Figure 1: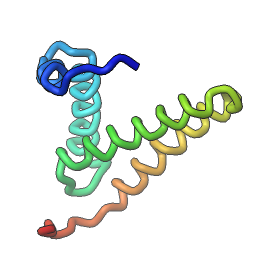
Figure 2: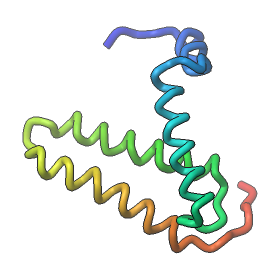
Figure 3: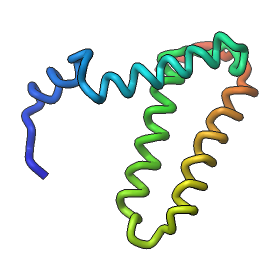
Figure 4: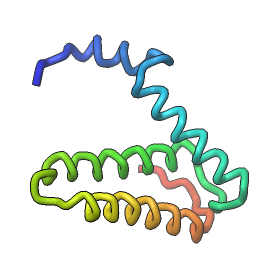
Length: 101
């Protein structure tokens, strides 16, 4: 892996046309559409976007680390299960008070 300076990484992340930002914007739009359609309870869009982003990254990292031993059908099943669990959890979510940490 080639080291990239933190300044360059931060600059690339902020660029609206970066692949990373376009992917996050698409995810954010999907979450917004689900909330607007009443699929999720009252949620903090920013937090939900980050939860989905983290979940997707977790599955991708897992698949990269275990790509040699995991059949494609199992990888697909893992991806779909993760999304279904996140959506189901958000569908049954009750509003909660913000906690101060």
